[in-house]
Length: 76
Image 1 (spheres, rainbow, N blue to C red):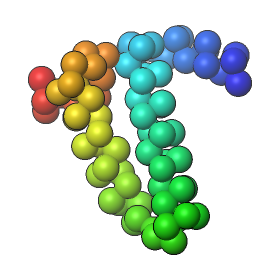
Image 2 (image 1 turned 30 degrees about the vertical axis):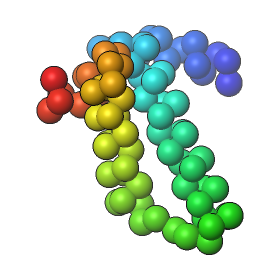
Image 3 (image 1 turned 45 degrees about the vertical axis):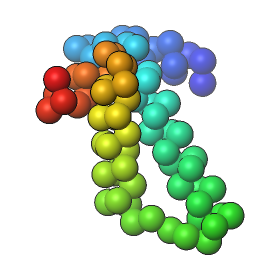
Image 4 (image 1 turned 90 degrees about the vertical axis):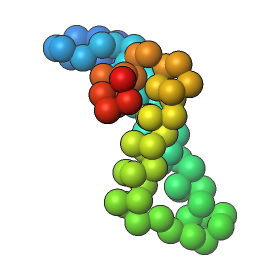
């Protein structure tokens, strides 16, 4: 896992910090959906989850996460 994380720095044309932040954000949203399904017995459609992730990226950018601007160009 550590090797994979370190190798992400070698992705051409994508800022390392932005990519890592995006991955953490996506994993966090998936984890919250998992908890919603297990504990609340509610299931969000995949399309809504993707929309939620995009909205969250936008909120992070508006809150000052400059590293994610490339992933939300409509907000810049």
